[in-house]
Image (cartoon, rainbow, N blue to C red; front, side, top):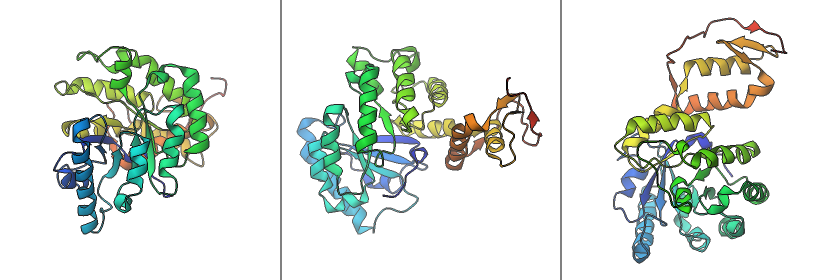
Length: 317
């Protein structure tokens, strides 16, 4: 299978499969700068509209085929089936070759095998969504992680954290004046970042559903980045540029990453006022370089020491 970087996802815009403007979005004619889109057949579509949504998805795939496929510059396209049975049916459509993969809603250890069976023999990638009550149980997440490593690791681009569904498990809804990190998600997101991230799985951040407070979105994105999340679900086009701005790498971080990855880097050194240790910071530095490749660099407000020399420090520091 081809490789897809999780950093390629950026702001992932969810759109109901019933919309009549999907083709323009898929071909980057309607929303400039969009990196990934999910055509949703699950929560965004009522039970009574499923047949209409499936028909509309088929029309979309036919239109893509008529155009000779999606251009390289177009966003990644995923379909979100209602369940593994629907995914197995869709995977048999010949024109699903124009889709990058499936978003798997409500993944648990019990249904992982059915999802794996649904895509076997295809080139479809998977993005599991962690949004059930089992997510609150660390041991359940360890079991799920180990099972994914055995069955689907090569297909999984990233794991999606379903914040609204997880809050719903607790009978809660986001306070419009606070970030998710000031809710029980402040426990769940670090848990998943540790359990799943330590095994090499990338994670994307939950949706920010308050459209009238972009400053709060910026605040939440800073926390998303601090937890190592690689993208964020978007529900409105106005959120896309804000999310991509947050994914840009500060020039100080970029210069530190380059210094850490340098062939001439000492085992331990000071750079930009901080201790750098290539053996420890290698993965962070690699991620910073890749993020900068996808989203560019922003000028930090702090000191820029791009041309400063390495300063050796004691290893015991």
